[in-house]
Length: 504
Image (cartoon, rainbow, N blue to C red):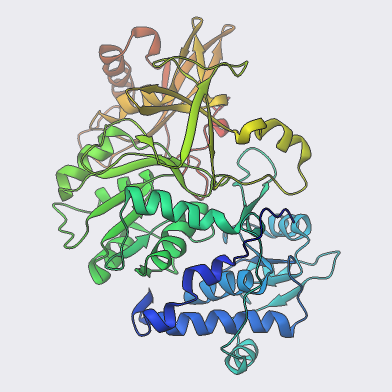
């Protein structure tokens, strides 16, 4: 492990170490009909740490977690860190082949999962024990474990846990995160942008195994003595609305597709107590922001983060939202926009976004070539996103491989998508480049709102093309419109445009 300086910390201890004496019976977690106080949380984290000790798990060994959002997830995650093991929460919707890869790649010593889950059936070539935390046998061991545990102290730059990238275009990569990284995201974004306090109640539709959800549901509320609402089931629009109505959170974390889905279910929704709405995972179309504001009276703070940076590093601010942008730099982070050769570009020009900050991973597990390509001297990380900057605001233009060169001119698919979204018939859309007689042309894949007046699809297609041509330069209008039932997406809600290329 890499160590710097003589200071020793443990982020689990930093987040809740003094909570029993300071906050005691204050509620830390809500999940369904279950509530967990800060005192209970601290005790159960210690219990899980002692379970690991009793099983002979060693510090730095990996604990792969395939679990729904629940208090037990928090016990396992922070209990592993407190003990010195490295928890690795992963997507709960994968297949057995995916879990075999993740278990093997991480060389996991322990798998924590559900009895009827796909991960529980995976056989590995290395020693990996399985723990089923919701089964009676484990509960007996857990209940009898000591509620006291000493933290495994490390240097701030030592590794605390891993998160795997989504693997949308290849095998997932294990991003290793430091103890200081969780605190860094809380003390920059959560404090400076959201102003989270002990009076807040946070609710995130993004699950805890995502970097975004991990900050929303664990790091931020626990760092500042707030509370979190955990939703174990899938965040369907009905489940989200029911949770908002039942618990009345003050801070809501969503993704664009979720906001869009909820908007279809509401009409003048009243959300008492809700003071902040956040979006990340995919750029927020201005049309969704306008409709949300019109329906709820609340603005959405859109931002950009990544698994590698652990949370949001560019964000809009309350009262200073600029539609169609990701906002401005979060204090504590730096960014620059460069050309293909890494040279700085002036404001207004589109290029590759590089960022640096204290929460950026030191690298991927066992991926030296990727590390050499993405992590540069001076602490810069190549995000893979295309951006422009003007007056301090950053505008997203797509992933590097999503950009289109039409007639020798770079075209952002986002610009065309945002324009299409302004049409009343369009629910969602994605624009990709397709080759036509040796030239790249923009093609649009569109899902429609459930409206009885939509009528003939061929006529609507022509109407949409002209709608875009009237608002943008004509070379940016879609060459053709394809109407589809759904768009391919990652579990985080990001549209997988690469899956649409070549699809006619």
